[in-house]
Length: 347
Image 1 (cartoon, rainbow, N blue to C red):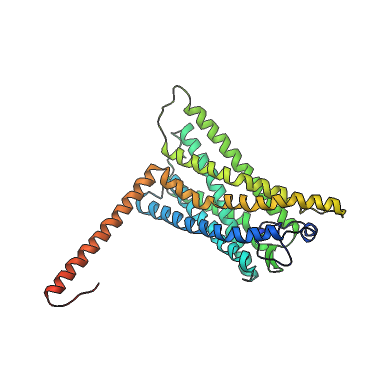
Image 2 (cartoon, rainbow, N blue to C red; image 1 turned 90 degrees about the horizontal axis):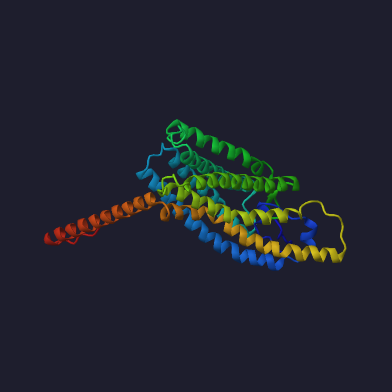
């Protein structure tokens, strides 16, 4: 991406795309790079901690209290796993901001592959969850609504297979160059950007179509006015996804224009290009954090929007509380018994 510099390699933009080298070399990007080097590791660390805690909690709750053969629960479970895959790449990007890429080319390829598998699977799962809810509202007697067992397994296997296939160029066509993990050439860089843009547009179309139809159905006078908590949960997740990823996709599309071959320009034209690219550089760091934070926001909405998940969480916390109370009571009884026998017992 746009902020590589020969004297400062601690930047992660290259994981997504590299700007035209001519612009990079001639424009002074030092202030932007330093901003990203301070801003990114700290906030990524917060996102990583919240994402791991939240998504693991969702997986535990689903495993403990829900029927995983249900298609809806299978999608939510796989979305949590997908978010963890996505999160797995963030520590490496934070490390790279501080030290540059010192982990070798094989690690570079693997990390980018896993990261993009998480990214693509998350988008596909959100589209499927939205389409599933659309069918449930528009045609509640459909067999898709009550699908369980093998149908859930097949759907999830297809999601992961398609995601792995979409991420495979990142695994095959990346390299370590000048202490940076980058795409091998500008063709694959642009391919990666526009593939993200197309996926975002496709996801947005699915969300807009499905939810506009659902809202029209629910607003009919004859419609049953009951609050569907699952609908509220999925709708909130998809809105957060849209708001989070729209600015990022706009920014990377605009920055991609600098990757196309540039003709030699005079100093005045170069100054205009530099002035135009610098705000995009700052916008990139901010919009990327907003977009990447979706991996830790999804579990928040599972807990605070979904009443069912909230009840499961409270039940689990009460169970832990009773267990700790039981352990303390047992410790007290053991201590009393030990003291009456003239011995001090320590747990």
